[in-house]
Amino acid sequence: MSNSTQKRQHFLKPRRTTSTTATETSTATTTPTTDTTVGAAAAATTYPSSVWVPTPGTSFQIQFSGTLNTSINAKMYDIDASDTSATAIASLKAKGIKVICYFSAGSYEDWREDAASFPASVLGNTLDGWPDERWLDIRQLTVLRSIMGKRMDMAASKGCDGVDPDNVDSYTNDTGFPLTAQDQLDYNKMIAQEAHNRNLSVGLKNDIEQVKVLAPYFDFAINEECFDYNECGVYTAFTGLNKAVFGIEYSLAPTTFCPKANAANMDFLKKRLSLDAYRVSCR
Image (cartoon, rainbow, N blue to C red; front, side, top):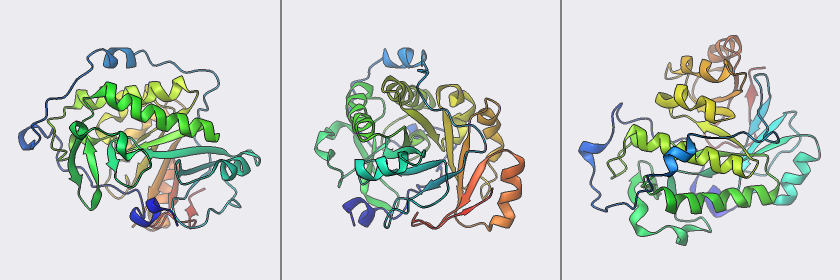
């Protein structure tokens, strides 16, 4: 078992702590080196014709722990970018399966092989429930674009068709930095552009409040527990563009959320928190 699966048993993150920014509760004193040009550049996100844009009705599997089960009949697999070998990815692709590779775009994880690449100035508060992870100062776009770009380079070199960047709603959490909604929009658009620069598809993970604005920049969405939290309605922004919404529920029974997911043309699974091979698909 890899270090990351020992430390991270699932990718569920803290729910939003506030509907506003964290400015009033900021504890960080670092003055960031803010790149004021990247936000504008990111607004011109382009979509190479080679980028995979999954449509509603695309079956999927997500697995981050245990021995990878490659026998599931699904059109897309979401797996960890660092922990999964190029050989395993190639075996999935040989079956015609699209492979999406997970990495954390909004947090520092002390066990990752590139942990030393993060300067102290970008490290904020510890994530609630994840003592070995810290929020990042996403205003430092130039620094983080380089680090995240290298992570996406690794994903591309392994043969991943796209990426699943996590923790891209940090402005709604207690990061230790006075992050604003605009800071998050600039950062998320930058991540999308960098993925597209590498011919990688890119998904928007959660970030419920900004789904409608960001849907044009991302190729699909990934959500955790929007039925449990009554937040799924915003995803018409993706399905209305004929882009897939891949969802996971941990607590609700499939009989509770599957009819709603199917009616909304979203693709949902029942998963365990460990995100092992177990899955119950809604369709």
